[in-house]
Amino acid sequence: MPRTSPDKNLLASDPVGWAVSSGYVDYDAAVAFMEARVAAIRAGEAEELVWLLEHPPLYTAGTSAKPDDLLNADEFPVYRSSRGGQFTYHGPGQRVAYVMLDLTKRGRDVRAFVGALEAWIIAALAAFNVRGETREDRVGVWVDRTEPGQPPLEDKIAAIGVRIRHWVSFHGISFNVEPDLTHFGGIVPCGIATPGYGVTSLVDLGLPVTMDEADAALRAAFEETFGPTRNVAPPDDVSARA
Image (cartoon, rainbow, N blue to C red; front, side, top):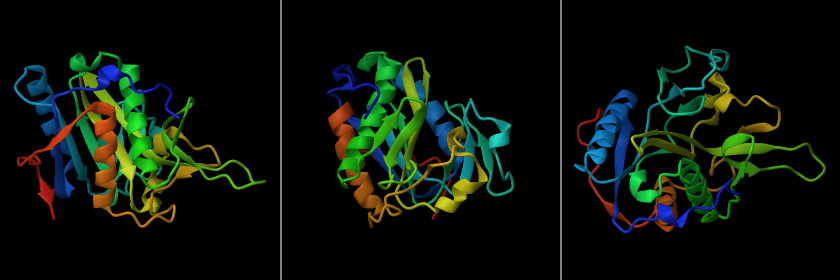
């Protein structure tokens, strides 16, 4: 379960903008948009925003990434990222949610915020009868797939990597709906190479969940954790391809 229960101070009464992009969004363009949006939120010139999208296949290296964890630099483009964490993969079939919230309004507690992100994902998984769990020594949300009498087997189904600037969050989570799991083979995901730890997705678990269904579960769980949302148009100044 989450390391910390969601703090009620993280709830807000003002609706958060909820935007969903179609097509694959260019990573650099997405980061540039987030940088600008964070500055606007801090200045009181823009509302909070959760932006759901898919990227084309790529790897990102967080601030703690180790060079040796990039196993195949030629597999996909590699981007250095200002988010926390190590190497991760983004690509089609994976829902990325970039979370731009004003934590000044939500308690200024980074640990509670990360715990709330975990709780959000776990609640969304519960909508599909999947038990998501966290571990003290590992980031992200995991599914225990250990069979009776067999060695431990746990797979990550969602990753968390955030940055806080002037108490405004950006970057966010990645939620595996139906990505090509072989694409994780070019990296050591999140620096974890221990046998028995891997990656999974809703479809890999035998659940034929669509991206729309995953989005609905994510939105309902977000509202339970952070407060109401309202539909807004996705950014129109980022590069995307159908």
